[in-house]
Length: 459
Image 1 (cartoon, rainbow, N blue to C red):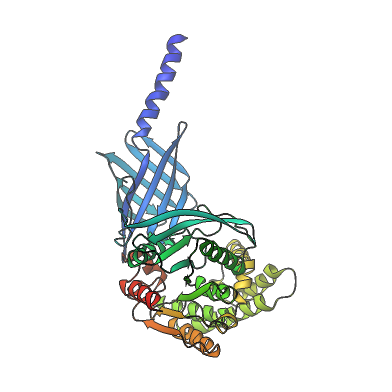
Image 2 (image 1 turned 60 degrees about the vertical axis):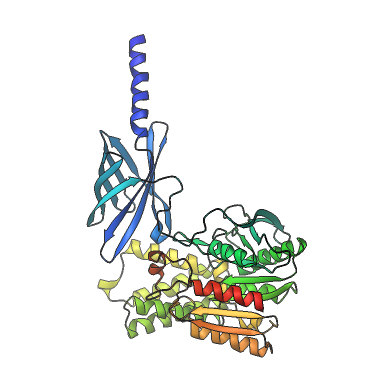
């Protein structure tokens, strides 16, 4: 009995040690037609079991679950039944050589152990220590919704008086760096501004990092109360020249707050809405549809359907919006030729997903926003910028909308700047597609940083 027990204990110790050599984050690059796609496999050991998640940094996707992980005799096997992904490779001198498969596609994939702190994607503008400015981690309460907000305040170390801006992120829950595809645009802005003599407060959105208060019922108005609380927090610290820089949805939150809080002294709108949101989204769908090769008939059909859906969402007075949206979508799918119609299961999944998204409180509220209601009240200095390759908030229409509203307000202290060849993230771009965001190494064009900082210091 003693001999048997010793053998069992030794076996499990050996198995654990053997598995530890594969426990790590492994990074490789898939050479797919037209692009190189980095992937990361994060292999962990829980008890005697190996578990794995997969990241696709270029696509902004993290923690894709891998159903089964096995590692025996230097052979690694990873399977995700849901994503139809399989990887089989052999560990050779701290490198795994293998084949990645998804559906009918099979590609060679070499994985290397990821070094601690190493970035999978090349992002040369990401700030690196040492920093010659003050960095303060802060938390405060939004007294309206009783939620806690956390962020980072960077301030120049060589000046006593300087303007401070509060950065407001776009749609979706983002961290204080507004990180997407490895790009940390808000940190890049904060670093650049602090070196030039401008303070910056950047915050985690609700439900991200150190900020709480996220719920399925939150809307743009809730986010506006977060920004207003940030203004009050900065004012209590003794700063008087307080400005707002809002990107995308943040670009409408800025005038909402500034129209109500006189402590805001200036606004910078980065690709902010200037026309009704439903019309903005029609233009967005058309711009992105053209890039994907849709013809005029397809674009018109999509626009007609979206107008019908948006009108329903904006005007609905009942208590079952999701079902109403589902009916409209079902009727449209029924018009398709039989050979183009999805299967019953696919149709049900599609109808449920789309109707749920369109009937969310945030979506309903956002669609009803008319930016003119807020921009037409703004008399403080405004800089509104956008890129000509922006396919999410098209530059011409939205900048013109902001201009018309500011003129209505009799605001004589504003500047409108349409910047050539920049996309929605203000990167130097080729076509402006969403897919291009992660492929570009540049986080934000230097001309944008210079434009904003010089305007703020002179306004």
